[in-house]
Image 1 (cartoon, rainbow, N blue to C red):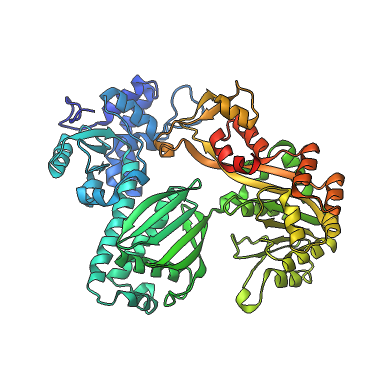
Image 2: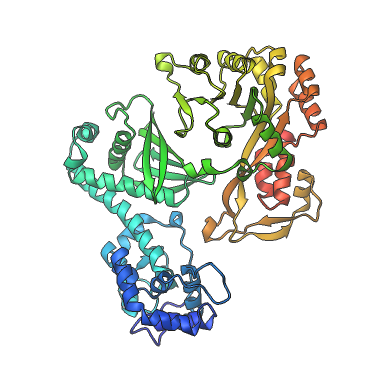
Length: 597
């Protein structure tokens, strides 16, 4: 892109008539719809100004989008902001840009322009250090703004057009967090004893917040919103030697989001510990807590864990989205015969069903989804967890507390006197818990639990190693399932390609199999992936497998029998997902090949 915006209309900027002309030219609006927008522009602009902001009310893109008009020939979907911007971009020959917040240097952006100016003119300098500097504007024809930004940066510009709504949202998040942190740091610099900040927080109520407190509160709120916007599953706040780093786990991969001083880190940690009802004065031992909040009318829970490390307390927050629990098993990735098998396990009046896999493979989500499916007024469902992952009113949930003697086994023993129908044990970790789970199944209860094994057959000998008698295991175990989470191709940039021959050979697929691969785009942060799905290995306990358990067969022998009985291995399940376009060969091989080669 050239340094300057297109001339001609530069003096007056982007007008509503220009935007409408671009949309009509592209067939996205009719002449009648254009006339309707012109006639009602003042009324609609007043509504936008009252509900959102005056800046958006002045933006032709936001104004047109607010009418909710449907393009000619389209039945339901109204015109989107991206479509409007694309049409204007084409007419003005100004490129559009998808902005990835995690690729932005927040500190440099905050220093580049004052927040008030950036917000008033809906302008964001994407990389102040680059030459020419890329700049996103809602109005790329505003030459006065371009001249000001150029003078401020002392550099030529590469101009992009983006929706005002998106730019303003980023300005609020980036400037909001960084400004709050900066103001807090100024106030904290006046205090000689930073380590006493925890006491400072504990002695004051929200109504009695001073400047430092309010800045920290706002910084934490901005951090939460930013993480929710980015679909993060975990927030990591890590103290380093000279700074603190915030990283977000998105689709299983960590991304650095923010950096700030260690001085502010202690204050932010204290705020989080206060919200999670932890002992803010205790920094020598790990602590666990929970935070419940609301975001865009959705109630979210976060499990908070603190750990003393070399340079302070590291905080990790696991974000639980309740909407995940509204999914059914097929939406988790269970298909066809595997789905039917799992549903048959859950339909049993008694027995044990085990889900296996490493940490972070989605085991708990699978069990919660199964419990939701089983949850009716006819059943008493109880869980024993460490900690409770997601509080649900349909279940009677018990949190393990070893410090007072409430262990998995003791809680399970008590639950058996509570007339349960279905019991979920968060994890079978020891011999006593394993034997209690077997006892529960023998006495007419359906027990669901998890184990850490690489595959489904491995669960059998893991329980035998824990001291469970093979004849008891053979008579109570109804099925085991191993699972992994693999990333899904980006729906915005994925294209059909023929699978490479060597990957086809490893997955056992025909060499002409067409798969989905994403080269990477701004929507997926150039990764080629958005979202995750599951691959599964489901093993029902057939008569042959039951006999093998009785005979104390090796895991390899049980695997062989299960495959002969029709079990799909993780690799087979992954290959099926690859052929269906639900994941890629690289993802499947990354999660399964080492175990199965």
